[in-house]
Length: 385
Image 1 (tube, rainbow, N blue to C red):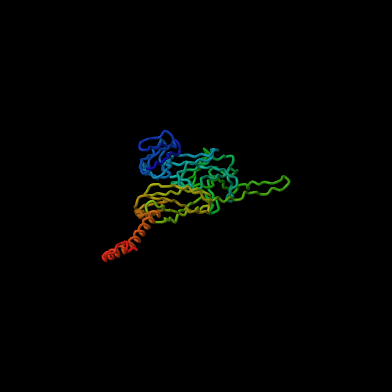
Image 2 (cartoon, helix red, strand yellow):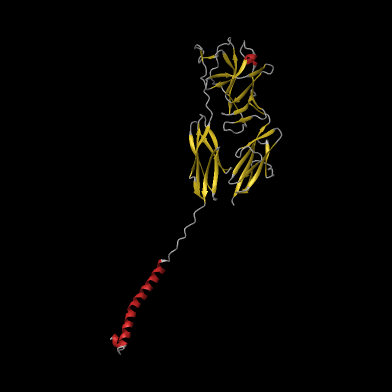
């Protein structure tokens, strides 16, 4: 039997540990060797303040029995019971309560949030000013179920004259509708904060509405020229990467033991942004191979796996939820072919046989005629002469 290498890791560091057949490594990532075909038990153990989310390659069951057929990397993902992400300037924070499902654009547990202050933004609504700077939150495609809390700290000195703090709103830019959409929110004037619930990431801003607001700020390219309004062009956010997997193909569907089977699927990135996708092949429920595929927006690719099995039977397969199967038959017995004698030996026996046959054909008639002549009182010498 061949030896395989299993790598075990945890994310984030300090969120928990992993037990392997009752043994707990001291540090991660941790590598160990195990013979192919052996099954081991793996269990994620959480630290205080964290909960287990899932394994990155073997599902969400915990503990889990894992069958070994090849080298594997297994990471236990943990999440804080109440996870908070804060921008570097301390203006925005995202609070994810215990029990919420927070996933990044690839469907993995969310471990980091991007806060990007931007200056070129879509036009604000009529009779409205954006307070401070808008922020683009990422990663693209992140989702929350149920919604999580976005808290925004504002500077009261940025609020235009004639606008009360209670009139401020938090809004996100709806790229499909091409306009800002107001969120359900709460204002706390004492702490100068606004709080709203969000279920996805987008471009967010604090907006002040008033009929008496001054016109937007204007700039001039030279002090000698009249000032002209200058608004930044609207920014159309890029649609996040969105992967679809289809058209599972198995070729050939029936083989002899040891013959190769090719398994392919069609992967497409229907979004506009570049992204990566992990395709996982499972054979009889066990992970056989994983493939990381990067695609630009709108691109597609056929992802191919190759496997061979030494034992006959029906093998069920699955690639990220797409099922299929193939059959391995008993191999045919090899033909037994007689090996002819070497040419030199075959020719020698043939030559000897021909000589004996010729000699017999000459000697036998002579002997018969001699015996007949002898009966007539002749001699063999007379006959020959």
